[in-house]
Image (tube, rainbow, N blue to C red; front, side, top):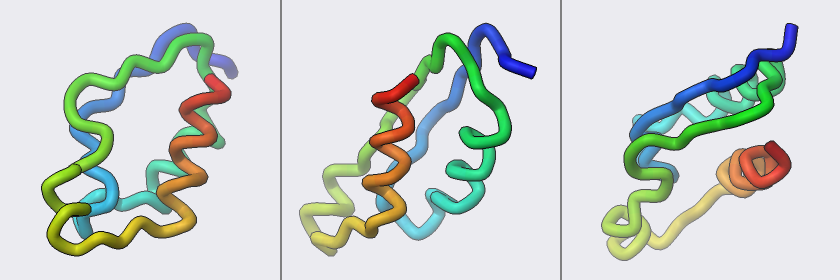
Length: 67
C-alpha cells in the first residue's frame, strides 16, 4: 500500500547509530508520495572528524531523491 506522507527525523548519516540497512528496508517496503525529513539528514560534524561515507548512505540519498 502506498502511503501519502511519511515523516522521518534525525537520520544523522553516517554515524554508527544511523542504522542505514533498516532505513533502506523501510523505504523499500513503504512507498509514499511525500517524504518529509525533519531534522538532520547528514551529520557533517561526524564526517569532518571521521570522513567516511558508505555506499549504503549514498543509496539512501538516491532513494530519497526519487521520492
